[in-house]
Structure formats: C-alpha cells, structure tokens
Length: 478
Image 1 (spheres, rainbow, N blue to C red):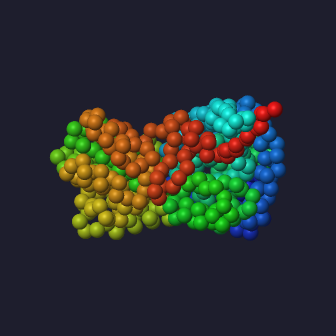
Image 2: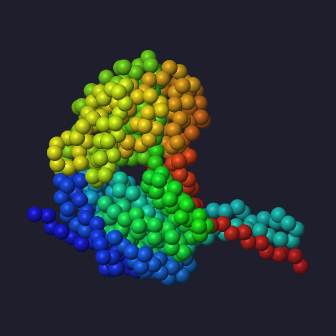
Image 3: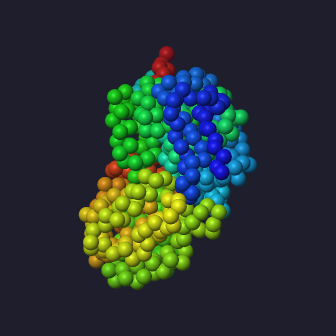
C-alpha cells in the first residue's frame, strides 16, 4: 500500500489550500505507483502568490546586502542539516539513485546557495565620475521587484536554487512553480527558507502548463525565468512580450562531443559515458552527441559499448546503479519513440529497449551510422542514448558540431593545445569543455546561444540578470 499525501501551495510564509478543483497525481517513476497529489493551481492562486510577493518586496527590497546574505547562509545550513530528507523526496519524485543524491545534488545546491549569499555583498558598478562639467554620475544596481520562475523535473531542487537564490540575493521576491511531476523538494525548500525570510519573499505554487501560463500573463512580475524546453521558452517569450516583461530562458541543448584521434580514448570513453548516461541522459548538457575522428571511430565505439555494458546500469533508487528511470510516462514514450523511429541506416550497437516491465527504465544505448540531418542528431532525445558519428577532419567536425539549432554546451577531446583553443573559439556554444564534460561550478556562468535561450544561471553574470541598472546624475556646480 502506498501512503497518499496531498501537497499544498506555500504562500506568504505558510502552506495554504488551493482554489483548484483538480489535482495532479505524482507517480513514482520506478514503480509507476501514485503516491501523492498536488493541486493544479488556478489564476486566483497565482494572483494570491503574486500579491504576497509584492507586499513582501516593500520590506525585502529595502534590506541590506548583509541581511540578505545572512538569510541565505542560514537557509543553506538548514538545507544541509536536512539533506537526508531532501534526498528522500528527490529520489521519490525523480527515481534517481538514492545513494549518490546527497553528494551529487543536495550538497551542490547548498554550495550554490552559499555562493549567492556571498554575491549579495559584491554588486559592483562603474566608479562615479564627471562625464559632464559640474555633474557627477554614478550607477545604481537595484532589484527588479517581483519575479516569476518555472523549473523543470530533471533537477528539481538544484534548478529551484538556481532561480530563487540569485533573485533573493539581489533583493527581489519570487513566485516559483516547480514541474508538475516533481514539486516535493521545492515545497520543502520554501518551508525551510520561511524560518529565515519575511513571509511572502519565497512562494511556491504547484500546477501544470496552464498554471505556468497564468504566472507569465500576470501583470505583477517584472521578470519571468524558465528552465525548460524550446517550445516552452518560445511560448513564454511570446507571452511576456505583450507586457514587455524581461525574460530569462535556459532551454534545450544538443551538446557536440568532439573526439580527435590524438585523444586518450580510454579516458574519453569513461568521461563521456558518465556525462552521457548520468541522470538517464536527462540533462540539457548531456554528452550524448559524439563526433569521433574516422581513424579511431571503431575503436571508440567498441570501447564505449564495453564500458556501458560494465558501468552504465539502470535500476531502482535503492540499487547500486549509475542512473534510474526516466522521469515520467511521456518522457519514456518520447525516448522510446525516437529510438524506434531511427532510420534504417542507423545501427543500435547497445540497448535500444525498455528494461523490465515496471517503471520507466530504459537501457543504456549506443547508436552509430546516423547522418547529420537525422532527427536523433538534430533534436534532443533527453534519454540514455549516445549517438556516435564519424568525421574526417577539423572542418567537418566543426561544421557538424555547430550544425544544430542549439547552443548550450560542448566539449573537445584532444592532446593538441592549439586545436583545443581553435575549437574553444569557434564552437558556437555557451560552454566549451576541454578533455572533460559536464562539471559546473557556482562561480562560472551556465547558459547558451541560439535556441538554447538567453540569460545566464550561476556566477556573477546570473546574479546581475536579477538586477536593473539606474543612472544617477548630480549637479555639483556652485
């Protein structure tokens, strides 16, 4: 028997009932059992949350950076103390391996909150100066006001931190909507944070696409931020344009992983395999589109298949596995459908099928023989499927690497320093890793180009995205 839980929204410093007449079933992706429900929040719920955030901004926007820093440090400490509880909720919602969640994601989130706590006291502008006779000019960086934020299901807690921490550090208040399939850890985050924040500073509401649309359409937020699909990002941008809201978009990715014949193949296989299959490949930066020089293509594929058979196991959260199930039924159908629709010239060297008859488990897969214009090369699979193409020279590798609509992340594997620097310059992606793939640090920006969106998460650049710039000029003549 599964113990059912009815989740509620967290608004104005407390859990509150929604006015919704419908709810969403939360399904354990490892068992396909319904274990909780959450409300499909209405436009009235959205309005209530924004009213609370707007009222809170009158106070929070006047706090000093030191006060905001201290609150964020205390939130980080509290999350760290309750790491086991966060990991339990995250594993239940996502199906991720429970044994590695604290180190891989919960403590990483804690570190990122602490980074933005420090950033709160490090906003900088140009020094004051006299750019016109008898007048002194200086720059103020100010909070934007109330922001609306929407997060995805692949890293629920981590993405919530990327949203709320810089917004609050800069003096804003927020209404945050987690994905409809993974709201639990975000609600707990709001509960934990409420002990250290004035009521209404951080509000969390649950719901579906309609709830998200109501958040974007509402007149209160001055900025809306979403991490999600390209389709969702385009819809948000169109809706926000009607009211000239600022938009912060972190969308899809189709990272090229370029492996030259002078690379350490064994190290490349291990690094790429880990970065491709981690979180079941449900990562916009996942190393799942590999381009390998023709001289070592066959060697690389054989090594990747052998490595994946040995190391890229999937299974239930309590098992010792690299990755768990896909997050939900729709995502499972999408991954399976894209593999089933591969063209006849594709060769599935490993996997390509469901594992077991219960849960959304999909085998680690390796596919070769695909062409540059194939759907599986051009569009996100967002699953544990690594494709491998063969290229003949640098020009073709660069053409194919950049030949997609996305521009989030990339990597190049080579022992030639000059080549690495050339590719770092010419790869049209917001991040270029060299002889590694997927590490992130709070001090460096994350964000892409083209259909991967605009705006940065993490770093001082991500922090500045939650501020506005004001010019102040004073007459100093007699």
